[in-house]
Amino acid sequence: MDLNTVADVIPARTRADLAALGPTVAPLAGGSALYGEPQHHLTAIVDLLTMGWPSLTVTADGLEIAATCTLAELSRLPQQPGWAAQHAFFECCTALYGSFKVWNVATVGGNLSAALPAGPMTSLTSALDGEALVWRADGSDERMPVTRFITGNKTTVLEPGDVLRSITVPLESLLSRVAFRKIALSPLGRSGAVLLGRRSPSGSFVLTVTAGTVRPLQLRYETLPDAAQLEGDVLAITEWFTDAHGAADWRRSVSALLAAEILEELA
Image (cartoon, rainbow, N blue to C red; front, side, top):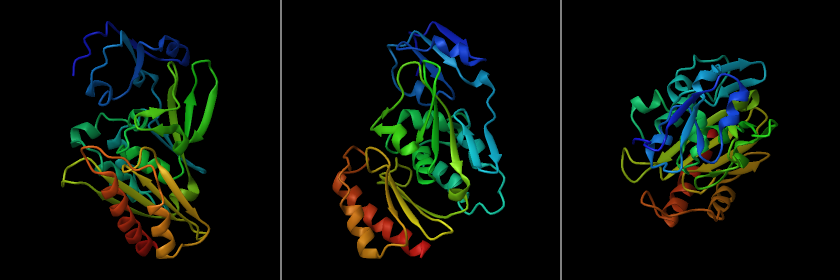
């Protein structure tokens, strides 16, 4: 979609260049979300790709994912020793409602910032206890869990002038066993529910529920719960929603079934 109200594209090369951002000036990375719907309020965009952030940085503490990292780059990260959860990178990328061409431009940060309930990077990074780094417009930095970064359907903690800089995934999550489940009303349709279970080497269990809820929700257990407890906790979630891709009661029911499959896989 053409952004015919945009009169200027500003390449950002330092953090100081981000001062141009504001209510009518938006950040641009891949652009798949920005160009996906009308943006009549915009007069300019600031190109973040010219910042030159390394897409993926493996450290002793885990993985730093730049907001400008594309889904294609994330999915193709060479297998890291001991990272039992790494298969979920590719699996979550396949949950994107878009072609391989979109993978090559859509960014992790853009997917998170769009805050669509079915955003696959929301599913992945929240399930792995990712921590978002936000560059605030006033020059300060703020770190927070991805589960807090996303506040609702298409809403985040970002204010005009703020930028999502990166997401850090801790090593413990990457070393954990992970099970992925997705369901949609049609084979190539937008996700109706995406669930990931994670069992750490210490035995703790986390179930992350996304796509069927307006924001990512987590159920945490010190040890593996029994099937009845997990089912009851999933069914007790109240933030299901209805749209063209699934009714709330359907999302609730299928999520309980998918949770049971995940529990069995990770037992």
